[in-house]
Image (cartoon, rainbow, N blue to C red; front, side, top):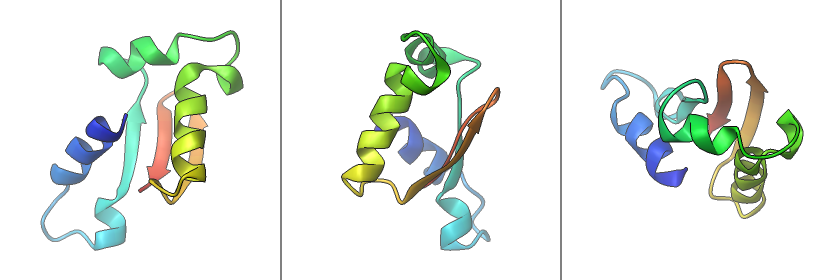
Length: 76
């Protein structure tokens, strides 16, 4: 998860603010992240949601802004 978020930050536009660069959408509709998201019974109890919550609690991410059908919006 951290590696994917770092990739998204690196792909941000150069003229974007630091806060803007660190606001990312972790898309759960494709790739390996999508597979992790499918593990678990309900949306709020999926392994991916638990991982992100733990990363926020340990202050590796600033906050989980929201999650919906597109993925997790994270302020890193």
